[in-house]
Image 1 (cartoon, rainbow, N blue to C red):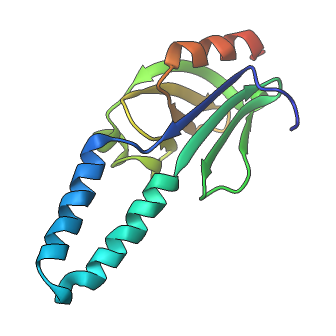
Image 2 (image 1 turned 90 degrees about the vertical axis):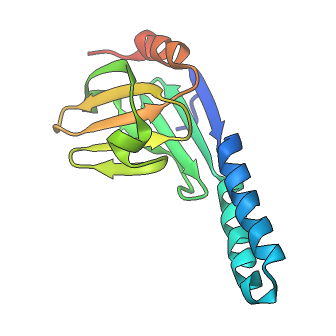
Length: 149
């Protein structure tokens, strides 16, 4: 696992709408008075957690590695031998997976942070994984260079 990656992408939860929503809720609780200040602390904890989240994606000689830190302390590997096929794909995070982060749906799992593009990996066991990316073309190109059927 100490191989140099062919491709590496780090994505952060920095969507403007998310921070406006959290800031608006915090402001509302702040001006509503001391009764709602415990909610303000909860918003602070949630905001800190979301700010610290980052999805790291790497393409290496032996597979694709994913880590959503701080949920995952180490990378999760998808070995090339586990992948039946792959393709770039447009998706709808809310409709297809119910949101962002690590999302499960019957027979599939998604790792996404923002946007609506990613790489769809069909696994030999019948399941599939969607990895969101802000640089889908580079991601697929890196897979093309390393992946062996």
